[in-house]
Amino acid sequence: MTDYTPEESEAAELVRPYVITRGRQLPAEDKFSLITLVTTVSDERQRPTRLSPEEQHVLDMCSGGYLSVAELAGHTQLPLGVLKILLSSLAEGGYLITRAPVPRARLVDQQLLQEVLDGLQARFG
Image (tube, rainbow, N blue to C red; front, top):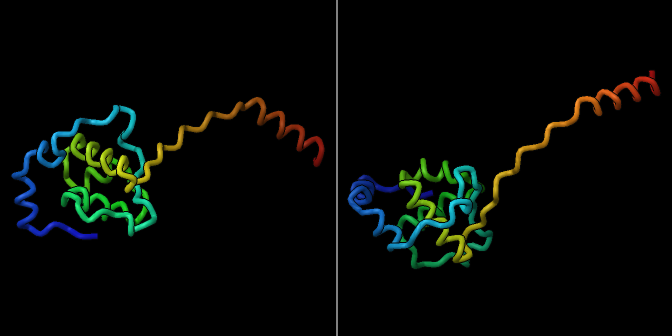
């Protein structure tokens, strides 16, 4: 993973978000929530050579495994909207794989569990 040098960090602070996003708009609201997981495709040869430094940094960070959008925002120190636009562009280009968060499990019916327990105790003592 490459880190920005102090000079690059200072220069990055001066770059306006619309320059980083090249004027692209935010993706659909449900496409990238804070807990959406993101990683790179497994084929490194597919990675393009003409990416912005921010896009390259995001791909480098994601190459180690799944990271949430919130983690990426924290590590890159990019505004969340800018990051979502970059992620959307990279995903549309086929460079990222996104995985929706696992839905919350349904609570189990306690009465059913008690009946199973009672049946097991009656059968096996």
